[in-house]
Every structure is written in structure tokens, then in C-alpha cells.
Length: 559
Image: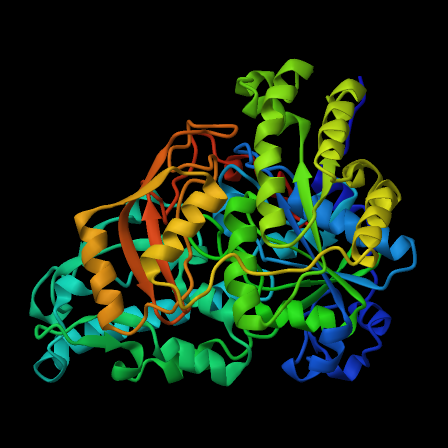
């Protein structure tokens, strides 16, 4: 039986270069860097060059509808970047930062896997350069200022505490913090009211950081955060509480992207980390533009399936950043296709051409959706040891019938050497010039129309039903003058529908907009489909229980 090294073992056995050597690959002098030790550095925003951005080639990596373990978008993104550098294309991979919730919970870290990783793996997965901590503090400063105004100044502001939906955040999975009552214990402890915690990745501050173009833009967006209403039903924003300026101070370093490296010594930029089922699910505009300013090609990824992260990347991020992707990679795993074909969890690694053939309908819908954006995807078959040639051929032949090239990506086992074929396929798709990106909808459409377009065109829903509460919010959005904002759907990542049990490519279904939230600071509207959790809980046996650190500071059990 073949024994494979763990991701952590592979990372710890690597010999990282000094970060100044990685910077030199990007033609950067070490004096431009803000060092965080020998293997990490922050990049100043002054390096962003719009002229170079327009000449660079942006490649988005997305995936089919995932299993709970994920399908390896980050691994493929890193492997593709390694492969492209191997064939002589100056490429930087630009990724999101991991959240400690999944790291200590069930899913694990987000630094890639096998021989397609970014390093230092432990640092990236654990605190990194403190960006998440700064976002947490900025979020909670606004919470403190809201409660302070309720305590001291509410005769002036007349904030109705029942309308305040802003929650505190912490970067851990902790279900006990979801809902609570604060301000108990007497008048000295402020006004009693309902509150709770979200995970930091779900904070609107995270979304704002990732959609800001510079520090001034960040400050303006922070000021636009919708806090609640007065007793006279007038809106209150963070700027009314003078909260945006000190919040921006806390984020003055977090807004700068982080430079690290791949296992093969190629540049990687990591910045921001919003989840894709509740936010936009992509790294920051600043990080993407930084990569494009410094490289001929940039590989980036968007969270969960293409119906979530990619849709939001293309409709929201590209709209705010003025970006036009030149290529799209759609990651598929045979494990996920078996799942969509009806395999139980314990059968994911059991070969079944019959189940794969059924599950291909899910991949087909994602291919169809990609083409609606004017992008013809390259399908990357992320290789697992349980895959069979017969199953791989089914995917390749299916894609060929849809005029799409499918290539096995073997970055997990072989790094860049295992990704040269997918790299060549992606370069070919760009050079053919057949991709002509276009957004799915016009932001000037009504909010209701934009929701309908996404649900029907991307999910395949027959219709959208709006609850009474969501209909009232639609009226409020219009009254506030926010109806020209793009849509950031919040729904399960496990189905095209709002019911995670409807796998593969469901037909004849309806989706229900249960409620709608206003993220005026981030600049989007959030329709909530089904029950969405912004504060996950730990599993029965969390990953944290298997972790340790020895007397020399060596970490074990991190995945």
C-alpha cells in the first residue's frame, strides 16, 4: 500500500527562499517590501499599475458543485501557476487567506495540498500577517460605538435598537455565540438588546476590504455601512457615528496584500478571505490588480461552485474593479461526479462509471453557465488515486461534445510537472481569443429582476418566491436609493437550488428569498435563500483535537 506524506510534512520539508528572492522574480527591490520575517512580506499599494494591468491575462479558477470536503480549487490554482511558470509564462497565483474556523473545524486549511502548496503553510493557516485580526477589531469597534451611542447619545441619534442587525465577529467556529442578549446587569452596562457573533469571514468589513481600490475608497465604504433606523425610520450609517475613520486606521496595514511563495519558489499573493456562500468569495481587488501589475498571467480562484464564487466574481468584483478575465478553469473531481450520480459518502472513492455518467449533468450546467458570461472553460480533472481511466475518458468525451477541452491536472502528486498539460490548454484558450467576457445582468435592472436572472439563468430555477419580509425590504432598498447595487446571493453551496439535498442538476424547482440584507458598505444586496449559517459550529471531532506543538515549536496535525 502506497503511503503519502501529509500536506504539513511536505510543507515542513521544503526549503523556502527568502522573500526578497521571490520579490526579485517580480522585479521588485527588497526596499519596497514590508517584511514579516524571512518568508512573508506586505506589498505597498503604490506598485499597482493600471497600464500593466490592461496587458496582463487574468485566469479564474472555479469548480462544479462541491462535496463537503471541497474539490481542490486552491490546489489546482497553485498547480496551474507552477505549470505555467514551467512552460515559460511569468505567472503569479493570487488567493484568499484561510479562516481559522475551517482550519480548526472540519475542512482544514486553504494553502493548497500535496505538491501544489503555498508556504509557509503553518503561518498562512494560523494568523498569517494579522489581517483577519484587524478586520475583527474594526468590525467590533463599530459594535462598541453603536452600543456606546445607545448608552450615552440616543437622545441625539434616536437609534431604534430593534433595527440594529450589525453583529460582532470572531474567527472561530463557536455555535454558542450565534445568538445572545447583551447589556444585562444594570444601566452601567448599556441597553439590553439581542446580538450575536458571526465568523470573521462573514463580516461586511471583510467584503469591504476585498472590494476597495485604495485606502480612501475603503474609508468611504466603511462610512456607508448601514447600521439601522431611527425611531422615525430614518437610516443610520457608520459615518453618522464617526466610526469609519478609526475603523480605517485599524485596517491601514491589512489593506496591503501579502507576498509569499509556492513550493517551487514562484510568487504567490494572498489577501482577504470572504466566504462564497454568504459573501463574494474572492480575494481582494487590490491583490488581483497587484498580481496583474507584476506578472503577465494571474491565476485566481473563487469559492465553492461556479454558481456562487464565480458568479459573484464575474458580476460583482469585475464590475467594481473593471476586470475582464481572459480564461476560465472549471475544476471537476471524479469523487464529486460520483456524489452527484448518487454515491454515498463512503462510496466517493469507489470507481463507478455509471454514477460519473449521471453526475456529469452537474458539470454540464456549470459549462453552460460559463458560456453565458462569454467564457469557454477548460475543465481541470483534479486527479485522485481512486480515479480510473474509464471515468476520466467519460469526462473528456462529455466535454468534447460541448466543445470544451478537459485535461487531467496532477498538481497534488507532481506539482508543476503534473500541470503543464492544463497550463498549455489554458494558454491555448487565451490565445485563440474566443473568450469575450460579459456580465450576466445590468446593475441598473431592478433588484427583483437581478435576483430572478441569477436564480433562473445560473441555478435553473423555474421561479423565485419572495417572502413578505423580503418584499418589504425590496421597498426599503428602493427608498434608500440602493436598488442599483449588484446581487450577492446567500445560499447552500451543495446544490444549484436552495435545498442542499437536491444534487446533480435539479429540474422543476423554485427558490425562496426568505429575507434580504443590505450591505451598503460593501456595495451589494444579499438575498438569503434557505437557512444560511454565518457562525458555523465545530464537528463532533474537530481537527483542533488532533493538533499539537512540540518543545521546539514544530506543529503537527495541521491539514
